Length: 481
Image (cartoon, rainbow, N blue to C red; front, top):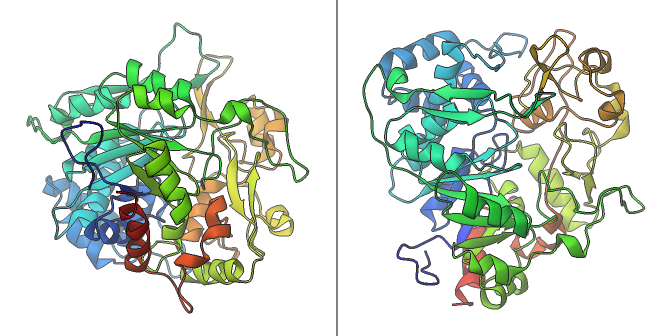
């Protein structure tokens, strides 16, 4: 932990990046926190992930659920999902989120986030964080409250402009109702669509005060950093400044429509961060995106003056991560023999943000596999809310069947090259859908550009461990102090 620039509290100098869905699960986050980093779980699709763990009779999940503060809710969830995985390998589905989710779905989402944070914090007093995507708005209030019920220490959020989140954390900490404004395509500026959550009502009319976690925003520009620090609804406690080399979703380049020979978006001078302006905001800041070598960590801490670094990709490859083991072994083999390639795909993600895709045969990065897959929307986490001509709110995703998307008023051009991240990312962690015809959802792997610089962190054989990775990274960090 590090004190910096006169701040009174200590901050971590190493954050393990949040990687969804379920790659940075509780086992990874707990291992990182126990070894002096900030372990971070991903909130993405936790309702589905925890429901599927229960269907597979996972004992840790059952144990954590037994500690949920409202026993009747825990019992209902257990009764509905425990042991319910079908003989053909398919799962009992979780309902879709909407503007008016059912009580059952709200309960599951709050409890699932509680379970994940509870397990990550079990048996120690070190801080643990949770990572959310601003783009997935319908689950946000319930995810935050569930994590806070389990005592989460940090909330880290990117993939959008999470201006309202600090104020929501303030209200939840005091047991007050909170609301979140939703982005709805086609709505007029005067129209406001909101999600509302009442802790008192959920907690059976009891006023429960909770610890307010620190809020870190993930940003990729000075404008967004300044806006969030100065104009959010509450305190932004820190910033994670993520460049375009980071895995997962990237911010689009400031100059639109410029691509390299492979079709990846080109980032230029306008995408560079002015760190002197960041320092003037007087909040701790972390650098993310290829800060895994001694040289880059020294640049971040000694030259730029960052509080620390956030690292994701190498942790995704560790023994403790949620990736299926066959994925990890294949990726490490490709890194070692120099065949690993990561493409910043401008089309893959339904969000419209560029998305890092590892080029691995047999996954959705393979054109043949992509074209063979029949489009289906059976999760809807990344769906866009829109207002139709009759004034009704609908849900559409450019990765759903093309005719359905167009029928909902979507532009057919938006469907080109889109991949269903919901299904693929769940497949990556062993919870993919299996259909009656025997078809299994294929993988889609996201990693950062740092894969080209990871060999020094890999063992001669097998998988790296959190301990081996943190030992090396801490060595680099400590040499800067």
